[in-house]
Amino acid sequence: MTSSIFFAKMGDMEKEKIIIKEYDDLYKEQVIKLVGECLVDQSVLSTACLPVEDDDLQEIAKLYSGRGKFWVALDNGRVVGTVGIRDFGEKLAKLRRMFVQKEYRGTGLGQRLLDTALQFACDMGYTKITLNTHKNMKRAHHFYKKNNFIFIGVKKEDMLSFEREL
Image (cartoon, rainbow, N blue to C red; front, side, top):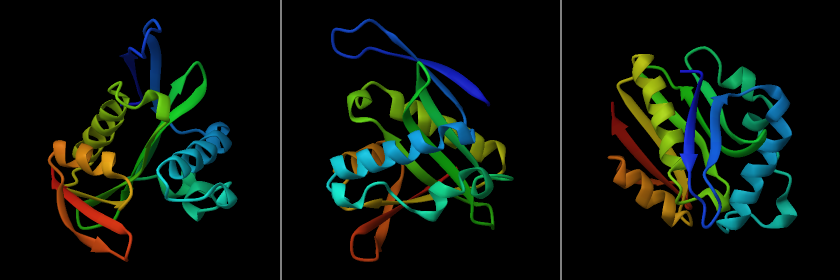
């Protein structure tokens, strides 16, 4: 699945066309910016920590290749959401970098991104998917539980781990 179209209603605005497509390096700076903005908004990072300098954001094309993949959600060419799948061997996939820009939350875009990632994981033959999310991301915890992820414990002091059978 290389791209899909999602229609979202945002307040009084008319329906906007959101395209979910595979990552290309031309979106790198926008992805880094979006991830940073979302982490600040969720009180995970302070603005002093921007831009985010995580290694996996510097090498998305490399780290999410093969049995992994990374997608961006685009609104008129602007990155408004992200999600990735990384291969962790033994038929285990890891959901990574699931972010939706604040104004697009509650529109169904996050569900569309997750569905894209889960379908890819199933198509690749993974049997289980795991993820970690910060303790402050309460909305994400609810979202994952609603999508049949089970809380499996605390990783480090501030990260919660979830998993789901595929």
